[in-house]
Image (tube, rainbow, N blue to C red):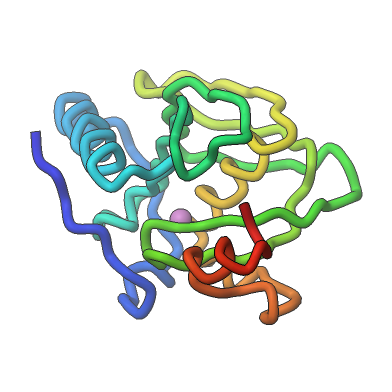
Amino acid sequence: MTIHTILRMGDPVLLQKASLVTFDNPAALTQLIADMRETMIAADGAGLAAPQIGISQQLVIYELNDNPRYPDVEAIPFTVLINPVITPLVNQQQAGWEGCLSLPGLRGEVARYTRIRVDYQDVHGQSQSMEVEGFHARVVQHEVDHLLGILYPMRMKDMSRFGFRDELEQHGVTT
Ligand code: NI
């Protein structure tokens, strides 16, 4: 397995719209997912999109179990979303703090839909659909944005709610 370098904001690959995954090389796809999981774990992240390791394809992974960066949210099992499309199921959005492995050390407050449906393909190319809410819905929206070339600061409405995590925590702005 390979732990990849994670691209940081400023790299143009992060601003590209990713290509559809075609499933013509299942072994390579399985290897890519395994490498992404290793990379995400090594970086202590909750999610990772393929463009973040320089592969501009519509594939994201996420997993949340007892992550010290997110102590107050429910565990989410390891999930792979391929060619995902989000449909909001509510009109309202809720503000919440996010971080991103491509902006190390930073956090920002972003409004996200509280409940969404995501249509996607699994690792076998089978069409799947699920409805998620709360923090899980936030993670999916953040990760799918990476496939559209969108980083979370581009979604922010109030840049006074953006800063370095250590300072925000020190001053009680985030926990
Ligand atoms: Ni991210």
